[in-house]
Image 1 (spheres, rainbow, N blue to C red):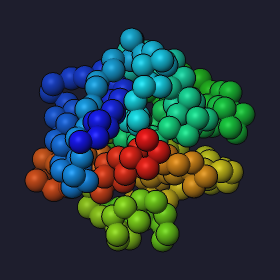
Image 2 (cartoon, rainbow, N blue to C red):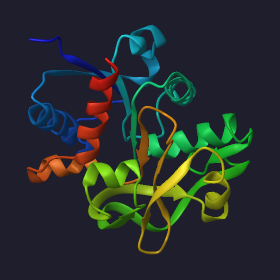
Image 3 (cartoon, rainbow, N blue to C red):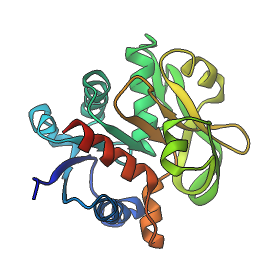
Length: 231
């Protein structure tokens, strides 16, 4: 039998976080679906080590911001983006991925997060309506990685967040190599991807929550498929 797929879960584990309960189950279900074995390791942000990440086949920046080591998370996000390591980001991972991209690709050195910063370009701002433990419809761009993973153009997804993309900046964020490929019914950004990357998908919604309803998460399966293809 081939060696297990090694997955790094970057974030500060909290047993009471619903997403953190769902993630191991989602990976387990995806491994069964793919008929492989997978080993997922939680890596606390205050002990991030690039050499450890290099040994993994894929990286997931998980929910739970602000992180204990925000700078380390931004460094990790830059590294996965530049090296082509298959990447999945959900909730906080999505928010931080957008800030990293804004700073290092768009050159917005002042790109900021309203949860942790008091000045700068607030790329991530408070949502007009809280999405803590809420569900809602999400639309996917035709032909996008997200749509291909789901085999559909919409889904009903769960959230746990108070912050999202500032609508003032959404057009400019999606005007370079990044593509905005998921929206809620009001047109607010709910998912992004880099088409020229082996697998780089980040969503404000937590697709992993499907596992708590005894369902597969199409994005987790697609992320792990990309890791298998690259291994």
